[in-house]
Image (cartoon, rainbow, N blue to C red; front, side, top):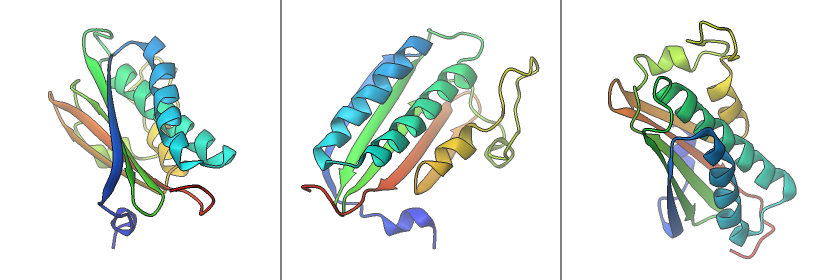
Length: 156
């Protein structure tokens, strides 16, 4: 049984934000997701975890998905609040795609010949969420889906 199967599929509320694939829009995506999730009254650590995971996913989509033509594509952020105080976050790009997701998810793996990237993107996302799924097709783009269960302290 996968960790993501523990999450409800029943959506209480959802939002979508589509942004140009520009590095400056990473902060907007992070802030929009945090503001939307705030209706669940998450703890400080929970909201920080979500912001970090979103930041990493959006940055990687821009840097890697559109590596040779940043700004010409877009990033779509879908956020769903699920029953049971859970959040599902999808970050989608229509960039170059990942030839082998399994290899790309290996800690320290990077395609960055210049050595500026650590190869820890998926590991970071996974460490700040409860479940992570990555799907990709070469030439069509990548979708990163993250799930986070919040503590039993809020209103919903």
